[in-house]
Image (cartoon, rainbow, N blue to C red; front, side, top):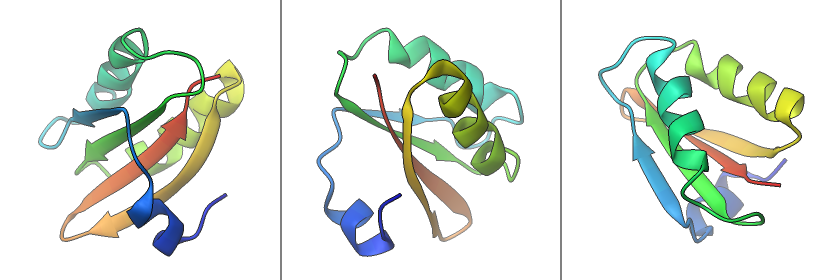
Length: 84
C-alpha cells in the first residue's frame, strides 16, 4: 500500500466521482468504469459513503486488482486502485 504523500502525487487514468451515492453505488460505478481503462492503469474513486473504504479494497482483493490506498479529504474519500 502507498503512503498518503505517494497517493497525492499519483497520476490517475480515470476518476470516478460517486460522491452523494450510498452503498453499493460507488462500488457499482467503479465496476462500470473499470471496463473503460486498460490493465495496469490507475483509477481513483471519490466517495462520501463510509462503507466504500471497506468495499473497494475487498472487491479489489477478490477480483485480483491492486488496492493502492485511501485518502480522507474534507468529508469524502479518495480511493485508489490499479487494474490488473
